Image (cartoon, rainbow, N blue to C red; front, side, top):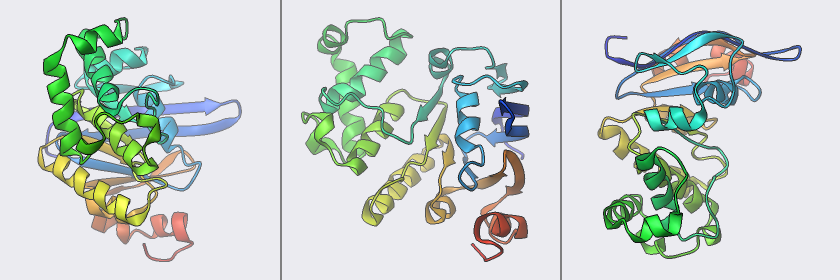
Length: 254
């Protein structure tokens, strides 16, 4: 890699009892690129993301974000440093409006903690409200601004959580299966949205099972199997890699 490295994962191991979930993981994520992490179910993909964001601590190894080791930091501290994760299952506030859902993380990111009166803060921060409206409209959710978030479709909830991530101005956005459970038209719409975000130079890590999504978006792909990286390269290199074909489809081409 020739560009600036935003995230550097070094020699990360993680075990759960007798299960070796991650083994000697080494990865570098280049600034402005979309880096996909793929692999069969149980390969260790979500475990790796949880290590990156501080939900799990590895047995050994380091996770350096913009040159600083994140190991031992709390999730909210890592989030405030600029590494923001959008989860596989939407983590929204179903009883709040769509607009309020986007304002809450924006205010929390600004203040550094969630220790604030959300309703009072939202009422007195018209600048944050204007930015939240802009992000929602940019993601095609403008018509839902005053709707209760819990009433939205699954695809729209996924886009809402993406808006909740983007409004925090992340230096690195981690997307855990952003199209999981979506119909094809919602998947294609999400691909278009993520391409637009990519054009703005945002660095992203994507975990995804849908190879159409992966090959549409990724600049580089790392493949996990049984907790270890078995391949790393460009989409063309990964597409023709026999180890990857074996891990996914018993030798058939991707």
